[in-house]
Amino acid sequence: MPYALCFLLFVIGLYCAVVKKNMVKIVIGIMVMEYAVNLFLIMLGYRLGGIAPIVGKEDVAGAGGQVTDLFVSSSVDPLPQALVLTAIVISLGSLALMISICIRTYEKYGTFDITEIRRLKG
Image (cartoon, rainbow, N blue to C red):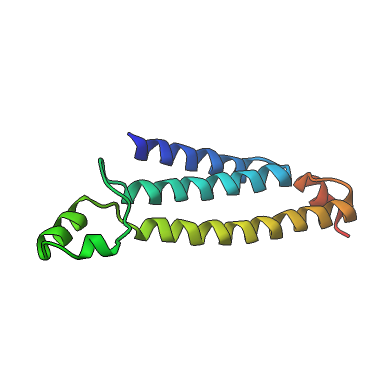
């Protein structure tokens, strides 16, 4: 069920990006899609009752392989967390670029409406 909600969130963002004519609403739709993908990646790495994937000296020392096997079997996968952290930084840069394009377009044409901008041609 949570994966279906991620898909629904992605479809809502896709609807905003494809159907809306306002540039700011298109940017918001793209960001909603990015957040849906980030949420999906985090949910892929989640394990019910899992512990944080942090290993200290006390976790390694002790009963040898038994502690390591127990830790691996009960910890949450850290790879999706690292990927989402990277994706957040990249989406922040792309958001800044999209907003700056919107601002420059508004300064030149005086509107955010895509159909109006296409009609002006200049």
